[in-house]
Structure formats: C-alpha cells, structure tokens
Length: 501
Image (tube, rainbow, N blue to C red):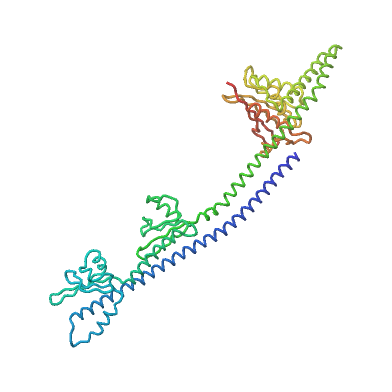
C-alpha cells in the first residue's frame, strides 16, 4: 500500500510539475504574443492615421483646385468684359486697361464666334483659324464645359467660349491621380491588412484588398463589414470627387495567427503529453504482462514436481491402509493444487472457453472455500437452484476469481463476518455479486484496488484483484468492479458476463 501510495503521490507531483512548466511556457508565449500583437496593432493604427491624413491632403488639394477654377472663371469673365468694351469703343475714353487685360491672357483658351458659331477670333488654342472655321463637334463640346458669354448689340450677337487653362487641366489630372493613388495605397498596404472601401450607403464596394472572400452578395458584404467593425472602428473619409466613403479593415493574417498561437501550442503540448502517456502506459503494461507470464510459468513449473510426489505418497498411504477419510481430504487438496497449477499455466496464453453451467461451477468453487474458511465466517448463497445458465467459460480461471474475491473478503473482515454471494441474469448479462461486512473501500480507490501492487494488508503482493480483472475483462470479455462500499460496513464486488441465449 505504501509503495502504491508513493507511486500515486509521485504521479501527482510529476503531473503538477508538468502543468506548471506548461503554464509558465504558455504564459510566457502569451505575453510575447501580446507584445507582438500590440506592436502589430500600433502599426495598423499608424497606417489608419496615415490614411486619414492622406484623405485630408486630397481634400485640401481639391479645395485648392476649386479656388483656382473660380479664379479662372473670373479671369474669363473679366477678359470677355474687356473684349465687349473694345468692340464698341468710345473715342473719349481710355481703353489701355482693357487692352492690357486681353493681352495678359496667356493661358485661358478663348474662341469668339458669331451667332452661327463661325469663329471670329481665338486665343491660346491648339488649332489654326485658317483650318478651323466653325466651332462644332468635339471642339464645341470641349469649349462648352463653361456657359459661353453672350453679347448682342446693333442686331449683332457674338459668343465668347472658353475653357479651363492648360495649367488647371494639368492640376486636375494630378488631383485625379492623387485620388486614385489614395485608394490604391489603402487596399495595397504593406501590412497585408484586409481592407474594404465602401460608399456612403455601405452597399457598394469602391475598392478592396487582401480579401479572399466572395462579397458580391449584399448579405455577405454586410456580414463581413459587421465582423470588421467589431475588430476596428471604420475610418470615415471625405474624398474629392467621391463623396463620403468608409474604410473597413481588420487585423492582418499575422496578427490573427499570433492571437490563436498560444491555444494551438496548448493543444499540441496536450496531444504530445497524451500520446507520450499512452505509449508509456502500453510499454508498462507490456512489461507487466511479461512479468505475469514469466512468474506464472515458473510457478506452474515449480508446483509440478512436489505435486507429482504428493500424488505418489497418497497412493502409498492407501496401500498401507490409512484412514480413507484422511486420504480423500488430501486428494481434494491435491486436486486443488492441480487446479492452481493449471491456472498459472494458462496465464499469458489464449484460454480455451467452453460452454459451462456457471451456476454449477460457482457452487462447486464456493463449497470448497466454505470447508477451508474460518468458522466465524458465514456464507449466504443466493444462487438459482435447479437452473442452468450456460455461457462460454474457462472453469479453472473463473474459480480463481471467485476464490480471490472470497479470500479478500475474509481478510477485510478479519476472519469474522458474512459473505453473501448472489447470482441473477437478464437478456444480456449474468450478474454475480460478492458482498462482505468488512472495513470497506474509500470511493477514491474503487478503481485503484484493481491495479497491480495495491494492497491494504501488511503481507501481500496486491495481485489478486488485478488477476481477477484480467481474467474477467480480457479472457471472458466481461466486467468486474466495485458496485458499492461503505467504510466499516462492507463492500460489494460485481461480475458481469455476457449471457449466451
């Protein structure tokens, strides 16, 4: 018992040590992962702030370009007004200022036509008045981005068409490139952050990056946006020419991996420990089996020689006229020794099961034990009378189980008390209960009592119940277990064997 208790204690110590080591490892890994995840999240935050600043820069550029557009409109109107004044000059007035205004226009393209769009004059254009006579087609469309200035006098109507300057056109192209590059930088980020840019209604995808899902369906898009918003607050931006947009993003794949890494590590370590324990258990059980086999074969061999001698001596006693009752009892013990020898010889080999009447086998085994038990031990037998229950059984090994249970009961009672043996059946099993009035077994040891080496006696190897479990479970495909036990009141063991119908 002390050896097994120490073994059990050491198992717990080793288990707790392993648990502490694993916990420290997981704690350290988790701390490290949190630091890396924090750094990764800070990078994403910096990226999000940079996106916001870039959007502000694009919007500021758009405002700046709008001011330039308005200024050019004013210049065009001023130039048209000057041209109108020069078309109807007053001799008494000074028109040098208007001439300066017209001459200083070096960048705004202007075309002057009559009411039939015949070109009268042009300035800062890319065509020659000799080749293009009428404002029409693509040229008219090009110069119609602003409403033309109309002037009528003396039944003569002229139109002044103008468009944005080359400088403004170049600036507008720069703005468009800046806007497009803004979305490109958002979705093609170096952090590999999954990004979706949607419109103000959150129904249409403007751009997306690092997304491997099909989001064409509205429901799928809304679910993905909701999942992203749970991780990070979406960025609201007002982009030039695009109106209000929302940028949704989630943690990078690396950050997601880091998040689940401690749990994966825990599972791997747990699987490793379970597999290791399983392999060590198989190895230990294999070693035990080899010990059982070697000990059993050696015991059977050692019993063989004195048993043969005892048989010869009994025959000599009979010839010499010794009391027949005495020799009969000796023969019973010799038969018992032969049975024990057969039991040991069958350990380690596949036992032969034959159809036996378990009622008769059990009665026979108990009757032998009754005559060799202390007088203060009372047997109560509740076994069906005149009934046959035929099941596959190895008689010698099954007797050994009944004997072990009864002898353990006698030891638990200190040689004084009651042993009750009951048998009943149903459609699936035959049940045999062996009860005693001994000192009982604590609930924590209900399974432990079947382990090799467990014993509560000062003398004993703790092999009886272990052998019994091996015989019932492995050889007869049955079950044996502690059905119930109360300290200082008794214990009941139950055997379950498959009923052959």
